[in-house]
Image (cartoon, rainbow, N blue to C red; front, side, top):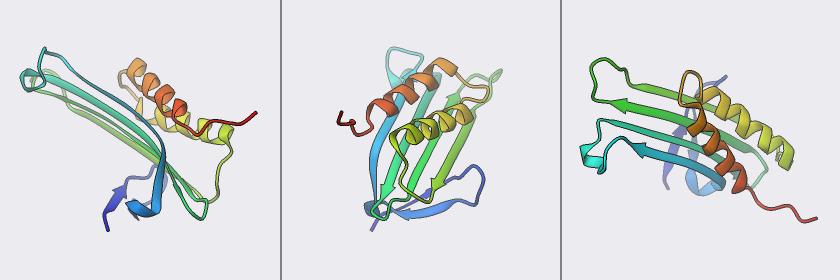
Length: 129
């Protein structure tokens, strides 16, 4: 079993067994400021994930991690997470992903966060119409 601890926004962190919580959507952004990663002075990684348990509970969480080697700039790390007790409708999932994105975007590179939000939404299971 592989465990994961997720930082929540309005509650204590939760610890899950990863195999019990299927990832149903994931958006990611990764960038650095040089030609090669090992030469980078600044790195940015953004992740937003949606996980669903077999009983319908849903986790939506994300992180924004900026690291720099420049003395005049600071590293930035924002995390957000929400646990929903029931399965969410597609519209509710989109709202939860946007809410998580808005929270991790606080003072951050907004365009990269919004791209990650759009990527996560695009990975949701398609609706049959």
